Image 1 (tube, rainbow, N blue to C red):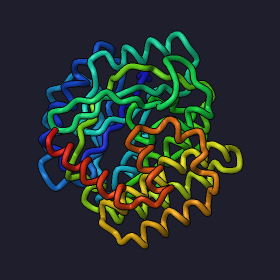
Image 2: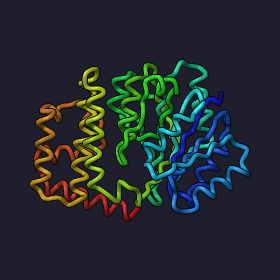
Image 3: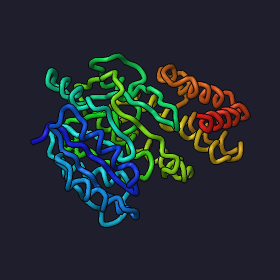
Length: 324
C-alpha cells in the first residue's frame, strides 16, 4: 500500500502535462501512486499521458471516462481507485514543490492525522502570490470549527485520510462548479485531527479559459446549489460554522458573479436582501474579520447598497489583472 494516492483529473491539458508530471518525478519522497483520469479529452491528452507513463518509473494508473463527466465525478472515480493511506488532489495544469510529500510525510510520521491543510502560490500571468489556505491560524493543529470556517474551499492544498472519506461515503456532488467546496467542507466535518502546515507547496495556475470563467451564470447557480448541500449536511451539528461559510462561499461569490455578468441593480439588491433574510446577523459574523481586504470592501459596499462602488471595484480588479 502506498502512503499517498494523488488524484489528477485531466481534460484537454496536453500543454500542461509535462510540467505537472515533472513536479511529481522530482519529489524527494516517492511512496505514492498517481491516478490520472482523462475526462474524455478532445485533444491529444490521453495519447500523451500514455506515452509519458511508458517512460516513467513512477506508479501511475491511467483511467478514462466513457463520456465527459466533469471534475467532480472524475475525482470520485479516482477516490474509488485509490489504495493509499492518504489521498490528495492535483490539477493537471498545476504543479507542486519538490519536497511536498517529504513535508507531508514528516507530519504524518510524527502525529495521528486525519487531514493536513497547506498553503499555495497563486500564479496570475507573471505574478506569483503567496496565499494562505487557512485564513485564520498558525502552523500546527487546528480545531474543527476553525477549519470549517476559515479553510478555503479548493480541493488542492489538502490531504485526507482515505478511510475518513470512504467510511463516511464522502463524494463530490455532480456540479461543474463549486463541487470542491462541498466536498472539502463535508470532509473536514468528519476529521478530528487537522493539521495546518504554514508552507506553500502547491502552485495554482489561473486558467482564464476555465468553465467558471466562461459561464458565470452557471457559477452563480452552482454556488447556490453547493451551499445548499453544505447547509443540509452540516447545519444541524455546525450552525455557527455554516453561517460563516455562507459569508464567503455564497454572499461574496454571488455578488461577484452578478457584477461580472453586469446584471441590473435590482437583481443585485434582491440577491443581497434575500441573503440577509436567510442570515440576518451575517455582517456581524466573526468570519468577516478574516476575509481579504478586497472581500471586506465588497461585503461592506453590499451592506450599504453602494452598487457604484462595487462596479468600480470589479473594473479596477480587471485592469490590475491585465497589467499583471
